[in-house]
Length: 456
View 1 (cartoon, rainbow, N blue to C red):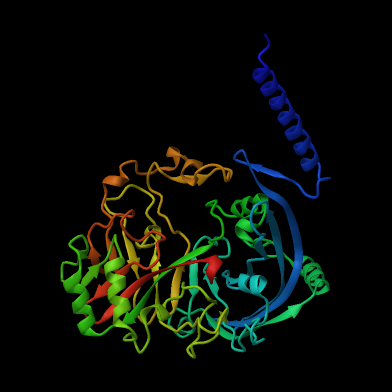
View 2: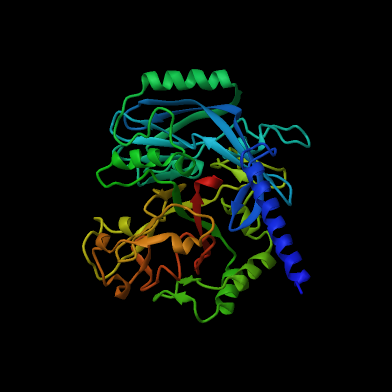
């Protein structure tokens, strides 16, 4: 006697298989109203819609090279693009791109200036939706990086606040900047003019600037090929903000500090590492005691405000009326490869990092060389694959090592020439993690401020 259940089950399986195959054929050829993407064996994406050049704006800025009197003029048009992803089970999402993300101008004395554009204008427009107020201030102060050598744009000095233009290391005089709406025709005209006037000098990325990870791989490879060291244009910066704090608050932090924090030999500096809730709680409870503000107002990386800040506590683009930035004392946090008189290229007993504090560096941050790479775990990225963990997409290149025993060495941290910590491992402190604290018993709190180009 035939097994009716088994026969019916087989027919059902074959029917489902035919239906699924037919569904995929219709969906994948575009006739089903969009392209169906398959990711990790699940059906998530219904279709992608590209919106190239949906908004354009013109960014103009004027500078003077202090030593030579040379005028440097930026005048270019930024194009905003977007990819809208229509998800099958939720609402759509949008990924906004900005081209270029940076423009670079050479100087006659062999240097260069990089100007960071504003992704926030692409993402949010020129006015606030509720009240129609302009997002771009009249006293706009763009974030720029000065490079001493146009042939090596892997390390430079970021001008984080207006103070940078008045310290003794300043290379530039700022004359003003503006952002105005532009059109597709303006963009085409600028592209044609820039291409006609362009000359390849040093590591300049081309007539239309550089878009970092938003640009094609060939572009990045081209930029690297222009440098003898093979380094790309820097796309991140590091600094410390120094904020005055009441002495009673300093002593409260000192008394409450867990044992795993470091104290300098002279007893002046407490270096916070590891868990952070205890110290954040003290800052929150303290309230507006930091020059009349809460501590977070002095930091640059909190959301809702983009760009450098001037002495009037303006100059940046704000996304809402509730987000404000306050000028604070920024100082450069040098990578290990820049923290010694000459770069370390052979095995050493110590690999230091250094914070430069003083009027000569006020308002500046260090851009580039984020990771010192002395050992066998020198890393490069493979092709990005969303289905794999990021940690699985790194490959070791031992031949790049010049010190295979680097993990056994010491890693001191300095403020100027004073050692704050004798041996502070990179994994414990100072990488790209924001809001690490150094408590100065003379009345200051230092806060580590990494500046990624997505948020300045």
